[in-house]
Image 1 (tube, one colour):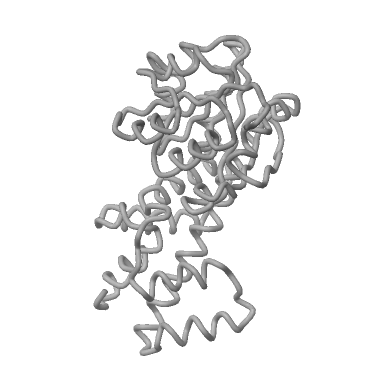
Image 2 (tube, rainbow, N blue to C red):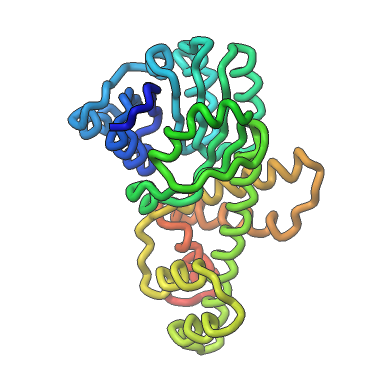
Length: 297
């Protein structure tokens, strides 16, 4: 049993929120959970979590609220909307946003939290469903130092690495940069394999040779293997990668920086999502490229 006295609320009991909640319970934190899909709450309730009927009710009864929400609009509604987290907030509350919502939405939530006297922390996640289940996630954190130290045990119950990037907003900024790199890398792997197939090369040999050169990347070995084996069971859905490129382009616009190759990648992921690959792993972008290249999938 964790000897920390903090009570915790989790909002968003999905692919990430569920295993993160399980690890909080395992670590001994009293947990309150809420999700619009009530069926998702039952397994956690059986493990001892308390269930409530709104986001505001979560925040009224705990010291720390964690949000793990899939879309920007839903996250803003959860935090700022009617019956939202801030409506039920008390002055000692800490709000930890683990969602990927970009720098603009994060700034809006941080400002609103400050007006209510609520400590705001953006603790964006490095890792997907596997590390979430294992409790080995990494967190890129934007927070004031005292606020982070107060809730550090909560983050360590769900992950093993905490990178304090700076004040509120810095964690979300870093997450945008990570997903830019990852999204571009996987798209490069997909385009390389597709062009190689068009040239008559064997994808298995391509992966072997590329891995033996200076091109050493887990996204080549792991996502490339998924592409070859046609295994697109989602660890991270393509529609969410498209959303992240929406945020990348939003950040580039807000910071007045040209983002030439990012704009092209944004269009590719958007087109792949529209073409029907959104609920598959984002490595399925290879199927979209093969399709437009006239190759059999």
